[in-house]
Amino acid sequence: MAGVSAVVLDWYGTLAVPHGDDFWARLDEIVVDAGGRPDPDALAEWELEHPAEHRRHSVDEPGYRAWQRRRLDHVLARCGVAAPQRTRVLDDIETVRYTRLFSTFPDVPAALARLRERGLVVGVCSNWDWDLDRHLDHNGITGLLDFVVCSASVGYRKPHPAIFEEVVGHAGVPAGEILFVGDSWGDDVAGAAAAGLVPVHIARSGPCARDDHGGVPCVPDLAALARLPALVGSAG
Image (tube, rainbow, N blue to C red; front, side, top):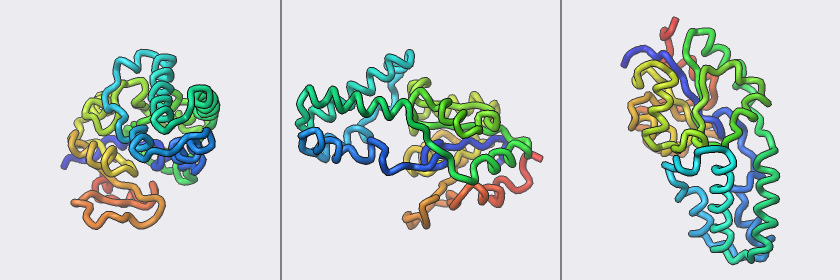
C-alpha cells in the first residue's frame, strides 16, 4: 500500500469512554420501570435495525431528533409500555441524551496531537447524534481534528459505503492512504475495508475475543498506533 496520509477514528469506544448508564445499554431496565415487559427482538431492533441510509430524516437536527424519538417510541410500544408512560420515558431519555457529555480516554489528546505533528490529516467518523461537536468541544480536541463526519447529519451510518466516501472526500487523499481506527468489527473494520480504507481494530477493554483478524492490526490503545508498520516512516 502507499504511505498513510490520513488517520480517521471512530468516536464512541475508540475516543470516547463508554458509560454503563447509557440508555441504549439499559433499555430492558427502562421498559420494566415503565411497566412493560422486555421483548428481546424489539430491544434489538433499536440498534440492529437502524437504517444505514436515512437521508430523508437528516435534513435538519429537529427532524432527526423527531425520527429517533419515533423509533424509540415504537420499541417501547412493542414492549408493552403504555402511551402515557412512553411519553414520560422518552422525555427523560431525551433530557439526558442531548445534554450529557462523554469524556475521552486519557491518551486521546496527546495521540491526536502526535498524529497532527507528523503531518497527517486527522478526522473523526461516527455513528452519532447531531451534537457530536458538543462532545468534541467539551474535551478540547476540536482543534486537533481536520474534519468530522457524523452519521446524523450526513444521512448514512457505518458500514454504509457512502459515509466512507464522505471520509475520503474530506481527507482529500486516496482511500488506500487512510487508516481507519475503530472498536466495532462490523461498522469500523469491515466497513472501512470494503470501502478501500486501511482498517485498524482497537480493543481497549482487553484482549480481543476474535480468533482471526484476517491481517487487520489490533491495538490496545492509541499510543500503539505509532508503532504500526503502516505508520512507521509515513507522512514525514
